[in-house]
Image (cartoon, rainbow, N blue to C red; front, top):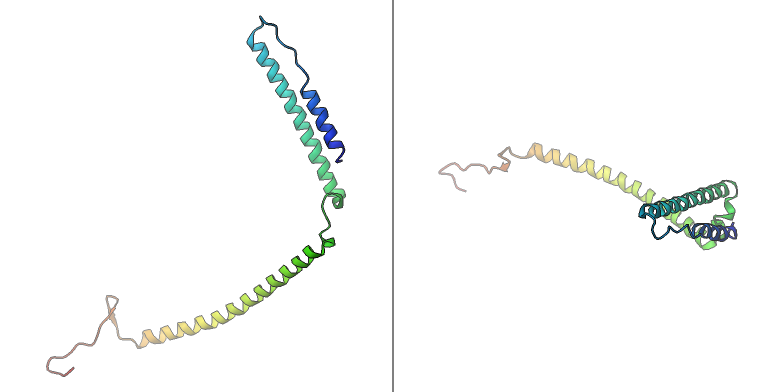
Amino acid sequence: MARLLPLLLLAALGCAAKPGRRPAAGADGADAQRASARGCANLTLVLDNWKFAITSQLRNLLLSDHQTVLPDYGRIPALSGALDELYRDFRALKEQLGRLSDRFAHLEASVEQLSRARSAAAPPRRGGVLQSPRRVPGTPQ
């Protein structure tokens, strides 16, 4: 596959680089534009065919024999160990997050109870501001 790809590339470039028919000096400019457009269309067709052939070969290789294309990560001990350690750390963080969530749930319930108790024991407010008790004239402060 690796040896075939450069050979195919050279063959396509050789076909695309063939000298086209040159218009005569008195020929119309439209003929020259049509010839170059035809050459571009041919090159585009060749490149599209190549793209299809390469992608289909890679797809077939990945489906049938992926070991030839992709490395075996199990053979790389440093990478394998690092992945195992990463998974362990992730699991440990997940467990710690669960424990912290439980603690905060208990704490949140306690805070709600305290806020309810304070709101029930607090004097009524007017306009959102806590009012101090009014002083009756003639009484000491």
